[in-house]
Image (cartoon, rainbow, N blue to C red):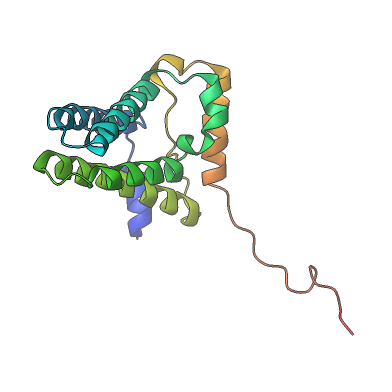
Length: 176
């Protein structure tokens, strides 16, 4: 008899490429929200935040296609489920500053993707009996680049790292 985890592992044979669609959705929603907010400028913050949204949304969409090597060194957290989830959570929280309907929808969808990434990270990290094979895929144009593939494989291994039990007697020194 299969447990729920075993059933999920045995039936989920989907490609990791669908994570690209999550990123494109979040990035394009943030860019569209930025352009929408730029049409309704009422203060300096109302002008500055949409510019930041446009830049971050464009970068998120760009990272689906191509990631410069300097970015992998400067933003290593973006290439793990937990790091990307926390970044999307923060961006979605800032989107909620604006109270119009489109910003609220953008924030909610960004949070859903963020919590999905965070939950996948937790599941991969602590459900160590099973090898899910989940990892963020490399950018579309760099899937054959060995340097980029190495970064993504390191993140896959660090996500699936099994925890060691605590050694009770061997790790401690006797105290008088």
